[in-house]
Amino acid sequence: MKLIENYYTDSKNNKWNKFVYSKKEAVALSKTLENCTNCINCEHCKNCDGCVNCIGCIDCIDCINCINCNGCKICINCDNSYCCLKCIECINCDSCKECKNCKECKNCISCENAKYREYLKHDSKI
Picture 1 (cartoon, rainbow, N blue to C red):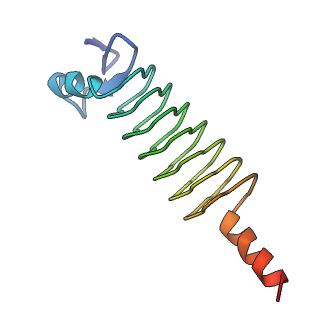
Picture 2 (spheres, rainbow, N blue to C red):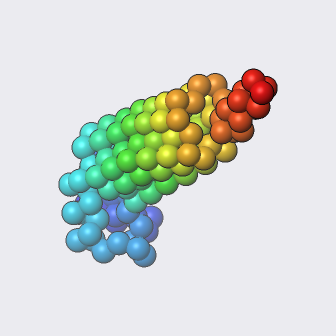
């Protein structure tokens, strides 16, 4: 673990901000990452690359603030997502593909505001 530009940096270029984490904490958190590279302030993740503030994520790439995600790509603010791809502001999504502004969605595919779209589909059947 080396101190580089105010970040404790491990051998895979994962980093922890020295103003937030002690060196001891950074070393401990580094051990919780499995096959992760270029991540910042992450913990308990697996196969991630370039993520920021992720916790318990799997297969994430360039994600920000993910928690317990799986299969993410370029997501922002995910929380309990499952199969994200290019999502933004996800919360409790399930099978996202190209979502934006998601909230409590399930089985999303190529949608923007999937909850609103489901409402429109239901409303048009009346």
